[in-house]
Length: 80
Image (cartoon, rainbow, N blue to C red):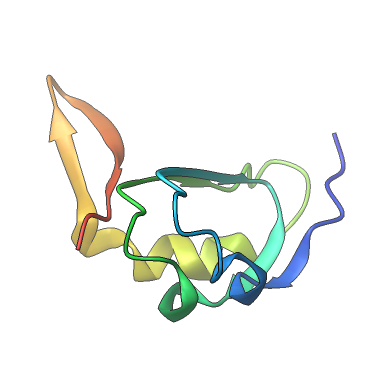
């Protein structure tokens, strides 16, 4: 499935009650600094089998927030 979201996450900066964000297979490539303090969890991945998604750049930046649970990777814990 093709997703047309691209660019920055800056448009989310005013969402003061945003708790969970899922950005799978998008061309969003920047803007983590604009995410609101209310954000706790990010689901982020890129299916590299068909298209080179730009979100893989953000996925790399989120590595310090990723934890492993029972041998499987959990979502990114992005709580402030």
